Amino acid sequence: MVEPIPQPSGVTQEVATGTLPAWAQVEELVREAHQRYRDHDEGAVADYIPILAETDPRLFGLAVIDRTGGVHDAGDARHPFSVQSISKLFVCALVIEELGHDLVRDRIGVNNTGLAFNSVMAIELNDGHPMNPMVNAGAIATTALMPGETSAEKWEHIRDGLSAFAGRTLRMDGQVYRSEARTNERNKALARLLSSYGRLDEDPLEVVDIYTRQCAITVTAHDLAVMGATLASGGINPVTGDRVVSPEVCRDTLATVASSGLYERSGEWLFEIGLPAKSGVAGGIVAVAPGKGAVGAFSPPLDRAGNSIRSQLAIGHLSRSLGLNLFASAPDS
Ligand code: GLU
Image 1 (tube, rainbow, N blue to C red):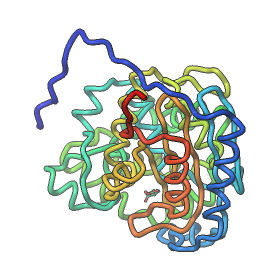
Image 2: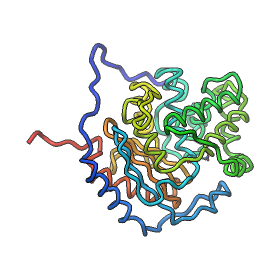
Image 3: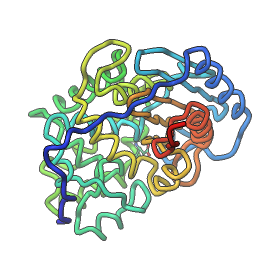
């Protein structure tokens, strides 16, 4: 195992500061970003999950929620789609909340694989280690750690947990679930491989079934923004006012996703956009600005790594115009 990074003791951790511009200005910038990329048509809709191939590539929604619960929706911000891999981010938070920082770092890992989201090689090259909760192998291993005596209980915890992040009851799309369940041989193979390395305590096929259900939960770009804003606000949902997870869990989850949320393009994403973010193959992306708020975006055509192209462009635009990049600083003037 890799040695843990040494931590200073007895030093208080400060939180991210700064605020978004005034409500009317954010509203205008969200509209501007939507309008600017509305007609952009690069990329291809995912088709390895058959039902996703039927999605209308013209759909494009954008939403920003600030940490006080202020809402900015543009275009198809309330159009439903399956959360897919973005569920990994929130299941990771729920598991860290239950089991703690160290267990997730040691059992799952927090380093990027540099390989595709469904890579078998990544497991083989790392002695069966799942590597991080944002790639399929690590996500399957993370789902297995959800509390619950039975698969049904684990699934309920996931659905209820994601609903708490969204501030409304989320439901699974049965058609999406069945379409993926019929074709997810690769995820089953990943789970069996993890199991052969002793990295999965539960039945691999049952865990893949729960994971497939979590990916088929229906959300909107607006929901993603509320869910992300909960992570931006120290774990309090800014719309409902309910605590969902602790501030420490938000910090750990955002650090994890920063290194691997856009798969093998995560480094480039941080370099260009400077925000922790997670994408899903149905076309969603959520990006979180700690202490400020979150952006949810949805547009089905993807790049070759599986990330929505228009969502990346719109979030990049907002990161600049709203001043969200975590790495940007200026001297006192
Ligand atoms: N359900 C999809 C899979 O396991 C999620 C992948 C993604 O959104 O990137 O392949």
